[in-house]
Image (cartoon, rainbow, N blue to C red):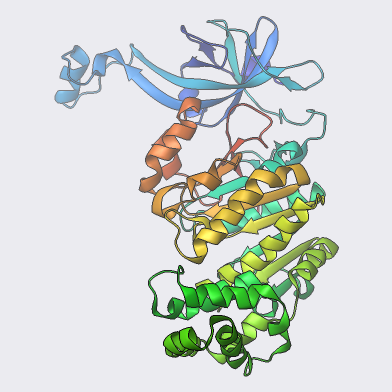
Length: 469
């Protein structure tokens, strides 16, 4: 699979372990080897595949903070000697390569002095099993292996604006899901990341979706500013929920008659004396809703129909562009609530839900309707894997104000991490530091480059991937 003579780049240094080691480069190979290059160690007649990371140049003549002849030469503007100069990389182990091409876990200490060779041919071609292939190695045209068993354990895609998150979803994740037998239901928050790139029968406007009673009540309450109260914990709002959730009679109204119908129903429940005290506040609150708001509440398409359409087509994008945040969250609650209901009945979903701008649904310090969407996503993430439901959350950050709530994040077991924001330094170092991937490397990633880590990665170390558009 490789030519020993021409591909020798270095040797294993002292202090090696079973999962990583330092590699001393052969002189001149510093111009050939790059960080994240794939390489082999030939150890005791077996090949060990790994990734070269955290390159470093060392020169004893040029140590900072100490005096040496090399420092003296440099101070005088003369070129110092290179006799004590060397270049090293960390070799992060992927696995031991078997005779049939399969890659197994390596548990043997790597032998110091073992030769190291660059990969010239695709090492992932003969893995066998149920492996799927998508994307490619960041430098080579080699397809990357994905373990489909990790799909229902959920996915988090993280990257700052312009890192290529939606491109990754469209060109890698969605085709991969469909190849694995999952239908895809994508929620396009801005209406410009997915909807323009699919066929007409593969998308629908959010305005066509019928809200369920609970979602409709939350939407009305938020738009009505909870009838002048600071929170949703007040009698008029609780009565509104009783009206909307108690029966589907409100669906028989039209956008013009629905506000008056709601007021009459609330008055009947509250009684004459209480109603007289709150009627003005309720009327002012309901007047905050526009004709378009009432039309959106009534909708035309049931959440169950949306799920079935996604299954039939294989892909359905809900275009949320042009609507307010409360409308978006309320419609999501209706659709995701139907998914949860089906899971509770034991239904096998075979469904992937792509949630773009995930912090809008399940962000840090969620308030109002966001609390309901966060809790629903958390519940789906905790229980969905047993029913072939996969959640793909797409976010600018990992944690804090730009990230996803920790109660949701802990159930997302595959990560695609692109160029990050400085706020995420600690989170990323905790996640990737053990694999010798440093913070500076993530700041320098190009658009469309992501570290692939977690349950869908068949190997123990993250792989830097990219994709062709």
